[in-house]
Length: 154
Image (cartoon, rainbow, N blue to C red; front, side):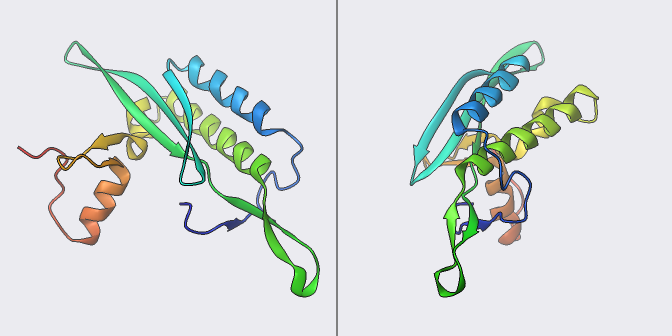
């Protein structure tokens, strides 16, 4: 995401008047409800990212797992004729993220998926070379290269 602005003219929340701050607050409260810690909103390369930590227990040991969700860059068509262009609609972008997170947590609450499985692609992982990437990006990159999928190098 972030390479190109998405035309959100016909997507949900295109005309929302709910502020970014109100959406952020709603997202923060939703994450806290599901045991998330360390919520952080960070600007990177002109895009805002939501990062948070959730405890995952494996064989009696708790691990803090970090997750990152990039707020999409969504625009709304404005103007007429040659003057028609996409203008950022951040209110819409934050409403969409709030809506998607609510749906993901419904999946967790209903037992369709565990928290970790629902957010698996959003886990951020430090590679041996020091770069930090999402598990989703790592897996897709390995699939593109038709490599065996390896998360941990020994």
